[in-house]
Image (cartoon, rainbow, N blue to C red; front, top):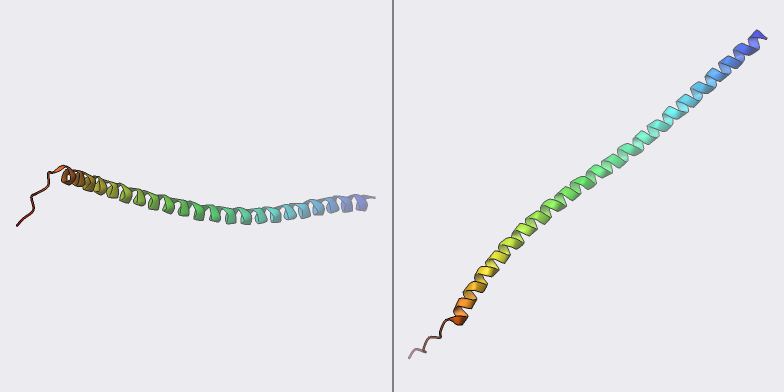
Length: 89
């Protein structure tokens, strides 16, 4: 009878060890999946930052172009309101 209890205890211990190992293997799988997801998130974050910088650069260029257009518009209005010159000759 004593031998049977020892076998039962050993079988339980072995079963717990197998379950623990299987659980750790599952954690490793999740760790790999999380690492992949984190890598993709890092790439997306970099792309978003690059897009934001490009948008800021485009915005600055557009503002400069608008300022030049305003200057040209002002000059055109001056020329349109100025009296015409008499023809030569």
